[in-house]
Length: 625
Ligand code: OTU
Image 1 (cartoon, rainbow, N blue to C red):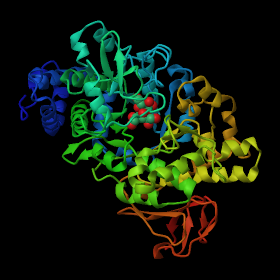
Image 2: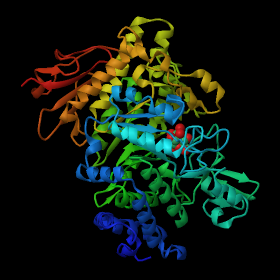
Image 3: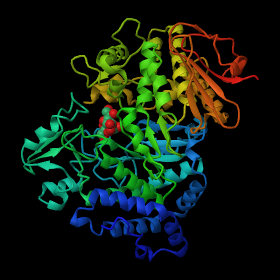
Image 4: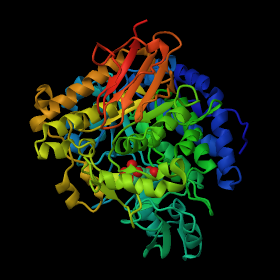
């Protein structure tokens, strides 16, 4: 493979002149970046000699199939590369069938999302899956189709158009690390097809698996220990990082690269504007390592970024790498080798929960100082408080140092409601012998709202709503594209009955959306109404603040008062904003405001700030100077 090879123009012969010209413009410098990465990854393989030409042919096919409305959207996005960094962006993540029965049902619910202010809708995997347990849809049996229970490809295209018409970008899962055992590739492998057997990592005995296992760390130590599963049909061990029915793909095989590029192009051409790269950290395995974040992972993603940018520059890549923040930063790539446009900030998420349980702001402050905003232009964090997964505590270990295990175990026990004074109703996940792997639970349950409502305790209810306001006030005040999890906007709680029916504890926080009483959101006397108006107030004020553009610096301001997080957002032009959040159940008095804010107004309440912060209170201050 020639690492300096030009774009194979012959691949574009069948394209109309205008599209061919646009592709060639976009290909410089993207093509060179892609070929450089591909030659590093696959250059030594004889079967990769004509990989660039095969890839260029795939790109040409995808360009010819790309709908005009998406082609025009790409042009608009190229003109406004910071479109997803603006303070009017708001994400929402849900399973199709937890929010509405299917894609058509969801299409009938878009007014609700518009009313909330959603501009980005991430739909969790909606593809054909492994029969039975499918790890919440992440055991994908066909990456380029819609699960028949949810609808058809035409329904998905229609939904993407309906969303686009409302200014809402569709996000889709790109499950690129593994397939279901039921996937046709894995089925063919089990029937003796050597080509498809080479799509997976298999071993004739335990000697290599045992060597790998010495440095790997398990994702599901309780429900899926180990990384290898014996397969009778193959008479070999298969690499299965997650559940035994999820077979890891062998990304050292260029045919896997090509096949999954086809998937990314399909997702883009059905109208996906953000591709969530599931389990991206695990793509490349290496003996003697923890099997995550290897350099080749970043080369794969940089190649995908470049190639997708030639066909669909309006489509974003969002890295789902639940690892330490310092390990996530490389997923953005570098200025001349861009990687992902977005990456989940799981460390900020876990640090906010850690701070709420302990009143200790240091992890939040350190995370902001060290990672916000990212250094690569036109990239940002996908910031969130809850999602369909657990709160993973392990990425905080590196931040907490020697006492990490003990401190995280305490926090996990707090959120499991096992500590005096705990307001939380959550459950530990995959934790063993008192260690802290993860915590399950809906946001409303973790902040104490579900418990307060069960015991009809008005003071506790008010404090729980204050905690919701505090967490979202910090999230929406920080750089990033904030992504709400389904139901958090109305204080929806855990579904223990669902959790009891499922083998995996994360179903505790995957309830069905309660359309029967969502009207309460408009009644301020109800908890739904209080939470809804709290979030709506934050969302509308965020839109109005140029200081909250994701590329505006966020500086931590040291405050004398304990448990208070102070963040200054200073735009190059326009008024700065000072965000103060009280992480504790005790009131705080602030008497060391920066001079600029000596007299200031809280934009959230419209009231001059007198220095008093009630328990769990947050203010967004603008200077009166
Ligand atoms: C992702 O999760 C998905 O979000 C999970 O729902 C899936 O179970 C998993 O991949 C397999 O597809 O990528 O960094 O709860 O945080 O498994 C690891 C554990 C992942 C998840 C973890 C995560």
